[in-house]
Image (cartoon, rainbow, N blue to C red; front, top):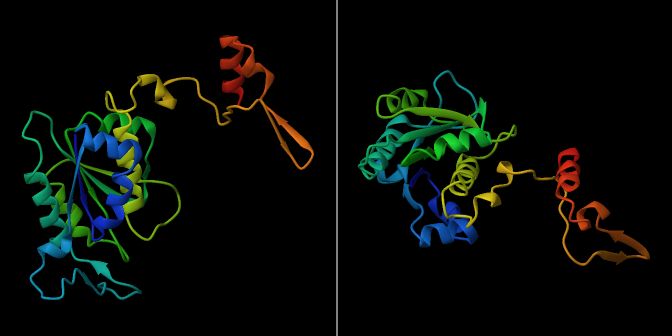
Length: 218
């Protein structure tokens, strides 16, 4: 699977995508990550990609064409298999991204993630991108963030861990088994300021039905 991030700050993304499980997945060629910087698709010497919004208002808006050309370049570098690529567009008002969405995205060969900045991206970019490939709009969390990079990283992470062989065992994908909001490990008892904190007894019984019931309750 190939992930393509359209972002002004590829260096801020690559640190996360090169570490731990994601970094190992890249090294093992389970996934690849490529970047397209909208600044590379402007014809001014300053690399300027933003302008004042029509109708007035605070802040600046990213221009449509640098985004379109960057996404177009990403699509041209994608796999030439039978699977179609998909473009991800972020919006705080869009549908919240879920595990089911991650499962659906795992079936694509190329995912282009458009990371906006400032007050957003000229809406005409979205209209043009829809002519190039299917577009899915998501919000990742309810908070408004500085840019689309953090949501993009969350989606790359969620999708990658679903790919065969990335986690070693399919059972490691928490949402595919009975998981809990509470987890414990050794030692059995921890002492802190004269108070003892113990592992719940049910987890030490080896009784899987009772343990699953406890986890569901949590």
